[in-house]
Image (tube, rainbow, N blue to C red; front, side, top):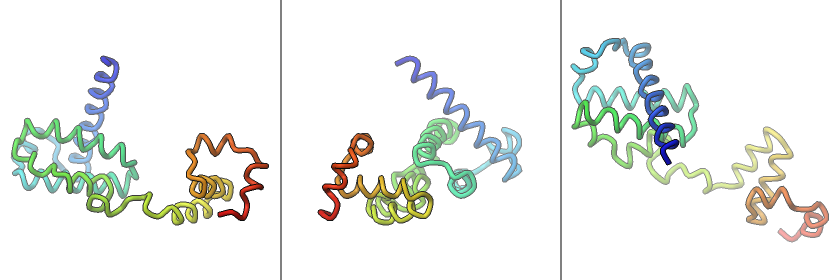
Length: 156
């Protein structure tokens, strides 16, 4: 368990360093006194812009964005306690997904996933289609035999 705590601590340090780099490069905030002069609203706007940048430019995954949200929440709250009110479930969902919570669920449209995969690679699209039609887990799809798949052809 101690190993995970160390990893999380290091991960949070990395996130805070990235946020500091963003503030320096994109916003011109280079020093601590400049940062401490920010109002809660200004800080929230910078956090909001940071997450938009991370989603659009850096193309970070949902899990990575969630880690960034958690890290910034834990680090910024002791510095500016009022910022806590901005780390709401809806803001977290918007920062993580780009939409309000539950509005952008990727699993709501499996046909679209298969179609997008087809544009990239026919094999991946076929595997996703098998998984969708049989409701099998990905590990089970790998174990399926060709004869079994042929026997299922036309049933779905």
